[in-house]
Image (cartoon, rainbow, N blue to C red; front, side, top):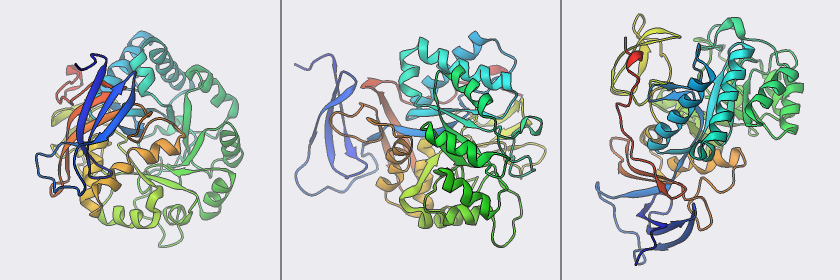
Length: 409
């Protein structure tokens, strides 16, 4: 008789290609055994694959829920975080960094506090949030590198201000994206590093010397490399070349098929190798049906079935990323011709190790029972999520169409 407190999950492991049966109990993987004899069999289109739950270091929103909600009281903010967590979990991402972007001190403080309160009130939220990604406000003020961040709130690093946000978050800020050319950035990066927080270069117009100084001070990553940049750059040197050339910098990329051309993704993959990882950088419209929506930042935007999100007035301008990390895994494999195992590692083990998160990102006895099962269409680059487990509990599959009606134009 099966123990009612035990969850059994079966599938072909994405990393080894071997079929396994794992049993989860008490939130961890209690046992795992292979269910086929020597020699992995060829898989077909109906094969059920299994991988660790995806780990996303950059999510702004999903399914109509926005981390950076404005004009809302704290109760609404907290409930938004809880709903967002459940939508993200159902997409196949079982651990993530809610991302707080450039805004006024008060707005950013309230976003941090809402995440803290949601974690304190809700066990599922606490288990899914591995840290907060603070993207800005210490970034470039130039058009292009600044991206969609509001110019009026961009500023130089301030350690006292940061500590106030860290206090509001309950110590949950674990990743900070900043521009190393800002006044005092190198010293700020040193302090982040000493505090065990990952400093990441992004939304920058830095020269080579600033990139080198930031890395020497302890910066460990480049945020969505290739995006948040000028439309035109000097042939050489420039800040993308400098970050690519720095072996001490890992790099995240948005591989949704729209933010980076496949040729760029291939070059970054060849240069960075095992130091390249995937993020979705999803905005709140991700996971919603195709259509036209009105947003508080860009006005009217159009979401296409491909996941491309662009401004209605200027279709050449993207209005954010609108696919899940599972989608990015499939598209990366298709773009680069990489094995499924390599693409999955970029969204599981690598981001977990960057944040020094133990117990997630891999499948093994004693690890957290965070897993996703899926069908895999290599030719189409399509990873179709079937079921999602968080600490052994079924929390999926993904359901599209869970949208907030008042976001429609």
